[in-house]
Amino acid sequence: MNAEKVSARAWVAVLGGLFGCFMAGMNVHVTSAALPEIEGSLGATFEEGSWISTAYLVAEIIMIPLTAWLVDIFSLRKVMSVGSLIFLIASVACSWSPNLETLITIRVIQGAAGAVLIPLSFQLIITELPPSRMAMGMALFSLANSVAQAVGPSIGGWLTDSWSWRWIFYVQLIPGVALLAAIAWSIKPQPMNLALLRRGDWPGITGMVVGLGGLQIVLEEGGRKDWFSSPFIVWTAWAAGIGLLVFTLSQLYGARAFINLRLLGRYNFGVASVAMFIFGGGTFGLVFLVPNYLSQLQHYSARQIGVSLVAYGLVQLVLAPFMPRLMKWSSPKIMVASGFLIMAAGCWLGSGLDADSAANVIIPSTVVRGIGQPFVMVALSVLAVAGLDKREAGSASAVFSMLRNLGGAVGTALLAQIVASRERFHSARIIEPLSPFDPSLQERLGGTLQTWLPAKQEQLELLARTVRREAFLMAYSDAFYLACIALIGCALAALLMRRQMADKA
Image 1 (tube, rainbow, N blue to C red):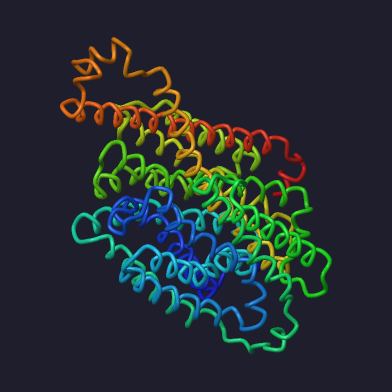
Image 2 (cartoon, rainbow, N blue to C red; image 1 turned 180 degrees about the vertical axis):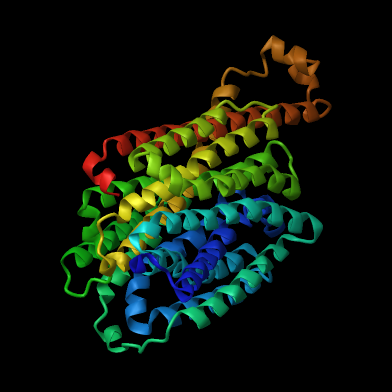
């Protein structure tokens, strides 16, 4: 029984880490309802606006693998304290951004500082809680994300409509102060080991920064620059490939590796990590896509978008506490597969959009996805860490969190590019049969070609807007459909996991 007891200090450490996780999640979701407003205020296009989310995620992705190494050098207490403080300062600075370039730069700093909070929250659960409380800890981890998703969009929409999108970044201050207080009381100071800085794997770190950063640039800018017909994209892709190769080889075979990538060779951890990558792509990508759809095609205000997304987080908030008990009644792999299938069903509901598809379609679609997410998040996390030694907690949490956020960044960029490219495709297909000499078109516009201009210019512009609207509806439907297919693939992969491994989890 003594082994199962958890001290008050350990619980405060875990809950403090969850506040950090909440802040990082909130910072993604609080901007979701305000994205269209931010894009309009700063003069950004739909594709450029995706950088507001992905710049933050890319910075997180680059910093997350370094977290365990930074903790070895500076101690967990100092890394969490400094990361939280810089995160809060950057949050305030985001609200003062005069243009898109400045906002993206500060978001990079904010993401890099907040990146340490995600794996360290995960690590504290693994190290501070006994195995019997692990499911509860993972449920709390999922709950922190669910609360962020529940309150983030509604708060962001309300603040944007009532004052300005610049106010949304101030909501980080209260949980940030609570986190700093929890760190100060619950995490004991430890000596620094600055000698590790000189023995750092700097080629591996450089390769990771160049590789992951270059990959994201290719994904974000490829569509706008016609992909590999652009020398810039070609050279960036080469740099990204070489950087990722150097990073991978240095971590697998280097004497100074800062993260244990060999954990991916363990069957359940590897499969769970790949599934988490796609899970991150689906969740973060669709959280970016839905507000833009509601604003662009249904003309929703920021407040209306926030209200439409509230149910998505609330259903997760309600379900997450029941996940540990459900895991006792069911196999983790069955839970994961069920969660992915439920999420796929939610995407399927959004894959047939038309002009009347507003909250009546989007809210059921997001609610169904929200029902599936706790199943995946809790069971997949427990499944991934089953059998790992506590000494591997730092690398395991870093790899798992990195792949989730990398999936989110890749998913956001890909879905933005899919919508943009499919809109151009569908527009071309719709316009193709139209001809100014077509009698039916002339009849609709009320005259012959000679009488169209300038009197009929307004009708021509209305026709062009109608064509583009229909093309965007089909493009968004395509994005939902592709997300549905990817999630079904994850469900099948979960069912193929080794039964004995799942049972051990």
